[in-house]
Image 1 (cartoon, rainbow, N blue to C red):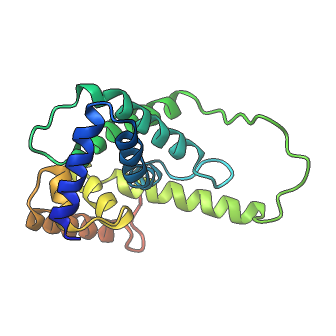
Image 2 (tube, one colour; image 1 turned 120 degrees about the vertical axis):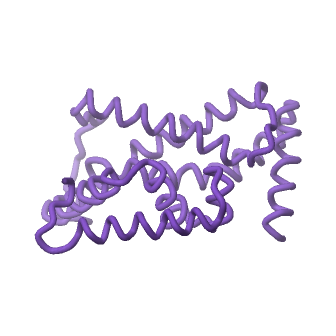
Length: 195
């Protein structure tokens, strides 16, 4: 199936979902959820114990928001996925704001046994790496960061990324190249990551 056929199929599914077809809504959410989860995990990273708890919660919020917005959705000639990523971007921003306000990390229950999968050193290293990667991404302008996340982490083609962000495939490739060049400068020995 070509990319164009896939987009037309999705558009038909969206049209039926907007009309309230429950099976179309279910199929639509099944198709968009993996993309949303990858996007949220890329933007929010892992939390405390190395899990993607916050990112998965935000991905769920995005899916619920899409579901609630479906009756009001109007096709404006852009891919539906661009609409979904717009919602996801806002939800991720909200999650960053919440995290900045609340630095606690409560758990429902105290575990009965010790976690033997990953020791404290490995957990600390993973957390430090995640923080460094987030700092690296934060030095980029939002448009560069979005291109890298959609291309490298979500795995979209330059054409798909361009459709999501309203850019030509060539502009996506140039933006990706510039973003990677800027990141290379930041990770040179002696360069400070978050500066």
